[in-house]
Amino acid sequence: MTHLRKRMLEELQRRNYSQTTTRAYLRAVTGFAQHFGKPPDQLGPDEIRRYQAHLIAERKIDVRSAANHTAALRFFFVKTLKRPYALEEVQYPKRPRRLPIVLSQEEAVALINAAKNLYHRALLETLYSTGMRRAELCQLKVEDIDSSRMVIHIRQGKGGKDRDVPLSANLLETLRAYWRWMRPKTYLFPGTVNNWRADKPITTKNVWLACVEAARRAGITKRVSPHLLRHSFATHLMENGADLLTVQTLLGHNDPKDTTIYLHLSARHLKAAGTPLDQAVLAPLEQVKRPRKPLQPTPVAQAR
Image 1: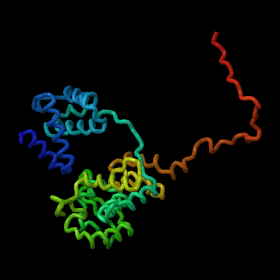
Image 2: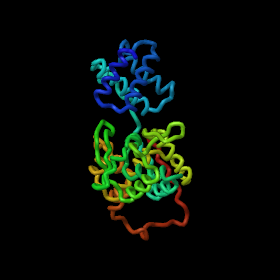
Image 3: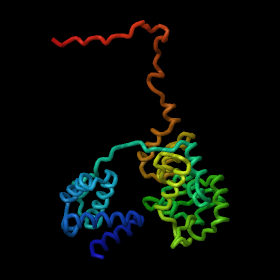
Image 4: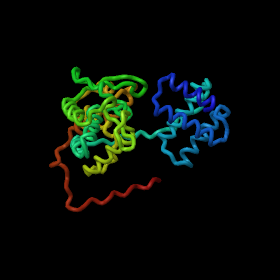
């Protein structure tokens, strides 16, 4: 391990970044240095901008991934090397703001019912019932299920923050049946080693595969993923009357702007907003002329 990599790793660990983010940041800086064939501390903003263009134009990665690479490089130069110029001179690639796809409540039920076994059933119910991220689900422990207070403790979520989310009575019933069958020791959803259950967490990839398999069995054509269930959880909460602050807290969002997107997805809010036409007082349709022959387009007068 080079001294620069060690310095960056120590800085990431000191700031309590997750293992997933730590690995991704280190990998991004390594790729940046290899692209130019120089140690990263000998490079600067000009090379970062050229590397951004290379990632998008030549490697064809999406803008979101390019932004993640940029975040890693900004961290390296600003936090590890203490060079403040990177913040002002290196901007994130502009990401298009698209509304996320969500499942209908009927589709969510069909997805859960299509789980191939009780392990997957409990996993899918937990994702949809809590809106937690898949990395948070992987680290969930048996002791985090608090049936006396009817909450689930999510420890060290994104940003290193803990939070509690409600424990659904239906989910508790499923988890109890799952525990009697599976008998997990430490992690609620243990992984495997050589096809044998191990006392370690399930991988994020296998969480994703459980979603994909259930979607295939349910005949759902949308691209189902753990994050789609998170979007669906938030949208359905708002449709059922939850306020924005509550949803923000349950999702673990720091910025309310990250939560407001679900206002655009909620059918209840869309119906409540209505349109200006709903408030207009128009002439009755019976009074509108109905010519026997289709109207011919009126010729546009030529400008003199």
